[in-house]
Image 1: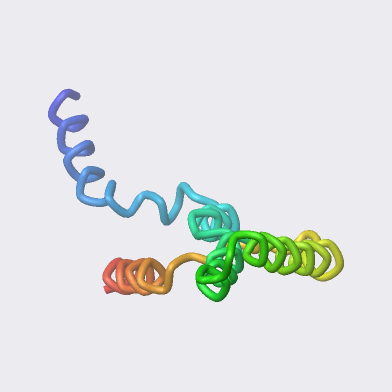
Image 2: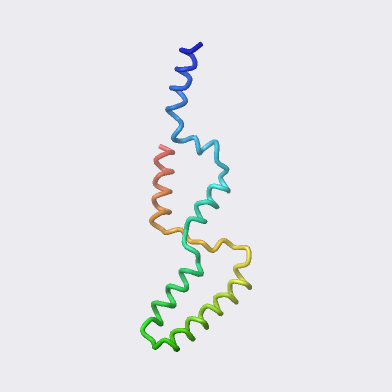
Length: 104
């Protein structure tokens, strides 16, 4: 009985690295991947910062507030209930390459 258990475990160990294929729910796994990315609001804030960084402090603060207010308005009207996190394209490519290797 011990020999059968040992051989059964050895057989299963060959496939443990891919057990996510039958253990994870596809929708939950994709959602988890998306949530690992940077939030769209933070991406927008960084872009606005880069545009207005050389201005004097008062102008900078006014432009940033105006830009973020516009983003919040858009976010509340258009993006309500939408995933706004954006994974890095390099991470996305890495994940796709990994899944292709699993397929092979």
